[in-house]
Image (cartoon, rainbow, N blue to C red):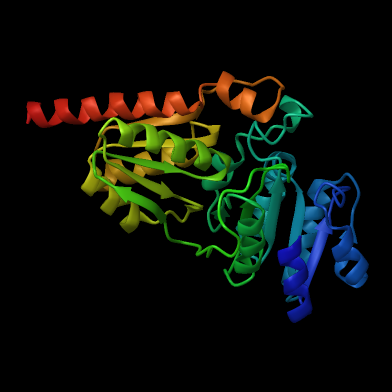
Length: 310
């Protein structure tokens, strides 16, 4: 909530709406500083979405913040019909996105469908910052993006991925490393660290890798993604989300329409996960560094076979 606090200091329109989620959002300091900017509706997420819509209609900029799944599933109709349909300036902040973030509370609080749900709803921008400082910047950037914005966050205990103050620029892919064009690795969130490790292992094998962060999943940077696909001719996507509907689907859609190339997806493979420690969960559900490496090697072979056939 540091980003929201900074915004509120400069803009009197900033509001925070919670659904018994103040502690989960770590927003007590914000409320202490700005008690008149805070609305608590209790465990009533649908009402919270409608309240945020009403505030936006009056010219305010509400941030509706709670668990990712409660925004995207419990209050899905309200988000779609009362926020997205009229294209209101509401910012949605969802925590516990992914299986790694919901390790303490199990499948009911692990949200791996949220991006897929919101990608199908018009007018919604989707941001997936990688760590705490990127989340702070994303919260600030969201205020300048017209219309509904969804900021997907983890548990608040997520590892640091970038050096502090590394720029967060919505709407564009972030090319983190270009050490060859044999394969492109696209990812976001907590899996970026595993992508970095996979890239190093691949490079040790003589495979040239381009590493790309896609923190803006919607609207996706079609031009940027297409350019990378054209250079590399093959890709692997990695995300802490169901492989259906998330980043992998978005990249494959861009490829299908603009640059058809072999692509493999790393993520939760259409199943309900169990509980466990974050790293152990990612390992168990085949999001290991070795899984990324194997997918890259297999996809490169598919690329070579495609070239030979032509």
